[in-house]
Image (cartoon, rainbow, N blue to C red; front, side, top):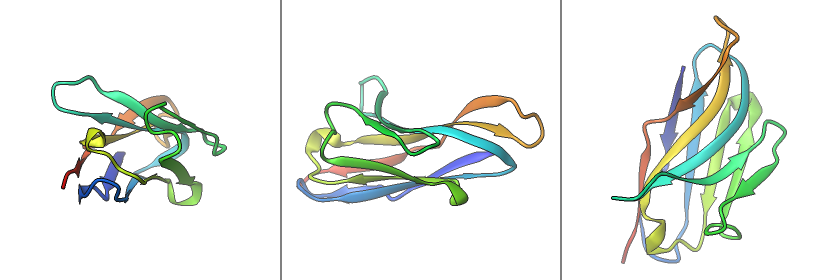
Length: 120
């Protein structure tokens, strides 16, 4: 099982980006999924979470600017980021609680990360 992120890049302040994360492999059940981010010399922080039923929660710093959504049949979540600021610059990581067909045990998986840089 892997979490594969895409959609990062360089964007000017005030711009937008859309990140995607797809869970691939022998997935039995996919539960809560999250986006984290980590800026240089800072701790990894939780940006947004979405439950299996689609209920989102956000960090205060991104509320009103970022939107998390999910497509359950495609095992995919998205992070729509608007009004981006230089302080949003970080590596963004996807995180998911899921069980595999083989074990049925729920573990937490991480993606490899995608760089988002907000700069003029």
